[in-house]
Picture 1 (cartoon, rainbow, N blue to C red):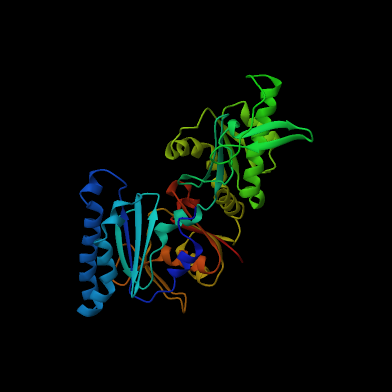
Picture 2 (picture 1 turned 45 degrees about the vertical axis):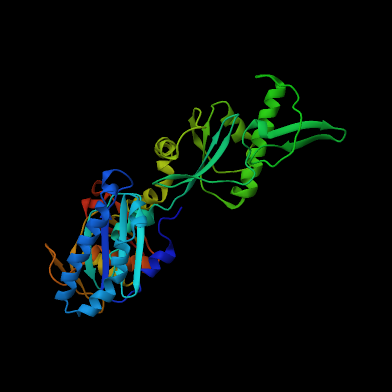
Length: 383
């Protein structure tokens, strides 16, 4: 469920100047889609961009060539009809890349020597995935989720419910048959089993064992992401007791979820799973605070920028939506910081992010209230 892959990120690091970064809040539905508001905002960005490029003394032909893919995107109605709530567009010579984001971002346009990747950090750093299995006697559904969404994961052979798992007697003993849309074809006769009888309980166990066997064989045999069980309350402890998967979480979501839509199920799951997909971030923050009295932490850009350049930043923390404008000379480590953006300035937070990722460090984008020392940038250093 990666929103942006490592390959995507690396692709954004190697493009020649000028590099154009456009960020927009977008709309999935409503009158804004019908009235094409998002594409109109994008066109306005392109018109502003033309003026900036002329000020940089690019020729008319150079500007037309640079912006041609962007104007083609503006005319692509199908693209604008299927948006998430945020959009990043990166443009350089013979290059355009769009990234749909599941969170709202500030509308902005940047023209610099490098791309601005800071608004992507929330997606990059929230990379912990998890699974959800919903169970009832009538159905079993499997989902994969992250911090932003939950999506159905179709598993070949996963039973449709108890009626898709049948046992019958043969001379050699019991044999398992499957029937139904996911379980193959074939017919078999049920032994009678009423609710609460020992036969019924055996059938439930057989059904849950087949769910677990299928999931383990098709998906989970080489995974270690947490699995949340959701469903009818009495089924969940039975499933956990027979499952081969070692990473089922203690939390459960009870109730019948056979007909829950993905976004409604996600709203219930998110609260339970937040500690799991924020685990790495909390470990990184704890490590920072444990070393706060040593030389292995920093919260001043004058220290962090040179450290990021020379691969000394292990973990970088940046405040969401914040900028530090100025110039950084990577040759001698000289740094200028300005209160307001001046011509030729770049966002030094973005520069630190690029350097940290390039040298294998981790970056976390935090709300201001979670930042160490109430700073807008902080780092745990390697040495």
